[in-house]
Structures are given as structure tokens and as C-alpha cells.
Length: 99
Image (cartoon, rainbow, N blue to C red; front, side, top):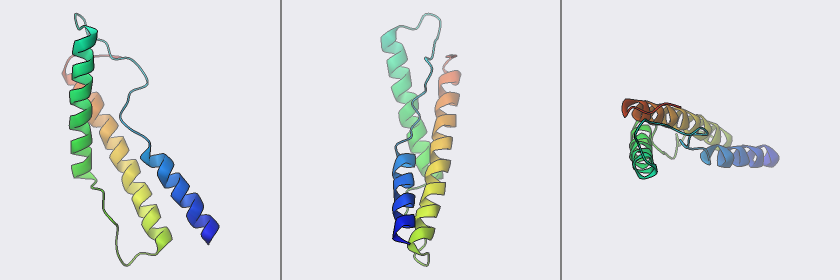
């Protein structure tokens, strides 16, 4: 039981490390490094806010067991990270960027 909780907690920690940072460079004709950095920061902040509203950081259901709470938190983190990436990508594309 303890080993399972440790494995779940470590998995949760690794999932929480994910973010909206794209692995590929965004490009836009005529945009300099400063503009790209600014647009990236704006889109990242907006994506984090919107994803957190859609999938808030909560303490979970008080009726759940420890393992159930961890599992629910992992699912919420995965959903939040996926939404954040999608919102970020949509924002950058909306500003005229492509990869």
C-alpha cells in the first residue's frame, strides 16, 4: 500500500512538472526575438490562467481515499496540462505564428 502511494506520488510530481513550453520554435515573418519572447510570455500566461479556471487545483473529494485523491489529482493535472498546451498553441497561431 505504501509503495503504491509512493509510486503514485512520484508520478503526480512528474506530471506536475509539465507545462506549455513548446518543443519547437514558433516563427512569424517580420517578428524579432523580443516580439516572439513577448508574445510567447503573454500566450503562456493566458493559457495557464484559462487552464487553471477550467481545471482548478483542488484538494479533491474528502470522501476519497489517499490513492483515490492522488489518482483524481493526476487526472486533473493531465487535463490541465493538455488544455494549457492547446490554449497556448491557439494563442500563438492567432497571433500569426507557425512552427
